[in-house]
Image 1 (cartoon, rainbow, N blue to C red):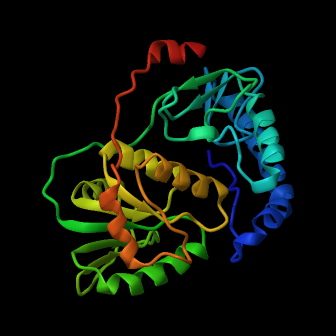
Image 2 (cartoon, rainbow, N blue to C red):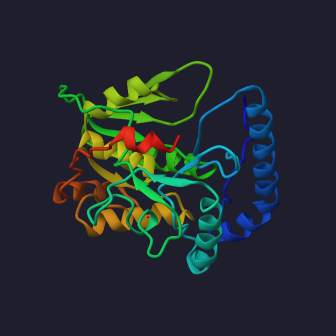
Length: 293
């Protein structure tokens, strides 16, 4: 079964983020309605014991135990955070439980995003989730650049970095984050450029790199925490969550960051003054967790 796409895009001007979000709301509500319809049709011919929704608002059913997975219990949107968070929490409360991929205590990765006060729902913390495993491999690259996220900001950052990194001393692996039918690899002096990498290739690339430069998206943060890497972050302009996470990690002396407009190559030397990520194992009782179903 293929679910409808939310088709979320971002404005070229980050200041227009809220306006565009409001304009996209009708489409979002229609998509949620389509999701509910698709799930209803699916369970008629496919008896299931439970539903686990990965940030899909309409993927639930009132007669089947349904779980919502997210780290974003608070949705940061500037001076409208109270409203966006309230709306998001209202949707989450319709699920039987909410599972958060983060540590439960004060030492965590998501901060206020995944640890709100007075949240009216059943919350269970899973610990950070990552597809990767730390490997003791020989360092091949001094710097790994991993681009991701919506256009046009991804392209803006790609163009800026390819200029800035010409003067960088050391081997660089540069992953554009552009998925295509075929992988391509080109070489510009000391920079190995890939349009994309598979999950296995990316795992190896991170393990064989001394430090990582990229967006401060939460999935990326969990991956870097699992592999215990040093990093430098450039939040996507206008994305309040990425900006908050970058500031949080800098305040905790884990990783430095810079805005996209203000970044320059000299700032990468700041990484040496930060501790980098340290991973702590988190035990989950899966028998108890899946007892809901």
